[in-house]
Image 1 (cartoon, rainbow, N blue to C red):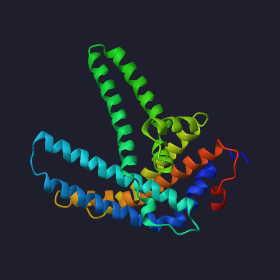
Image 2 (image 1 turned 90 degrees about the vertical axis):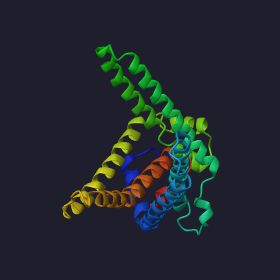
Image 3 (image 1 turned 45 degrees about the vertical axis):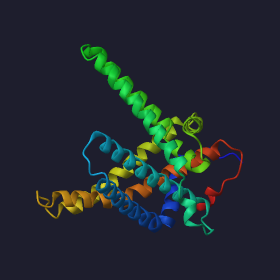
Image 4 (image 1 turned 90 degrees about the horizontal axis):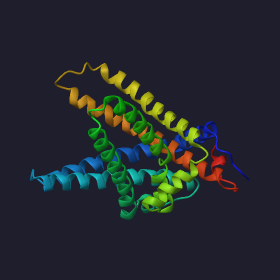
Length: 258
């Protein structure tokens, strides 16, 4: 049967998935932070040279590490949703290097687009009135593109799609659901902010000063990450799946997770 997309139903299902798998997702978040930190330190110890080439290599390696861990989190969330009543192996949540480089390619593409926009703005720096209007248009355009392409990473880990194919698929499923997708994005931003407020409030009780400010800042970030990141990923993946099913005349198992 046809399943029309509903933000309310999506949030209900997201809460159900998150509630059942929160501990697993939090543990994986902690492991991801540890692995990321360890590999970044190892990379900097190996490449001790301060040359431009070494710094470029470090940045590229860190980009690969962060992208791989992010994709593995998406894949874990998807696996937990699809195999709620089945056992699965750890290798099933590991993305391939191909997926990682596909994801990086999209990031580089958007980076090039931003550089082009900055270059155009630089050429028009003397025309303030035109530049102000252009910057508003550019901001709206970038936000529009980001919202329409938000699910490209889901297609990369779910269907092993390439960069262009995943972007097209993301644009396809958001074609008639732009404002619903926008609302989902705003909810995600709200979740990120709401999870940050209590953490900052609690840590502020320790009276941060110049001696412990850096430590408390890192602690705040880590606490926020292990709570907010799983919540955001679940909402993204559930929204993705519901948009997929809204384009198909099939029964979906997600409706059973309420």
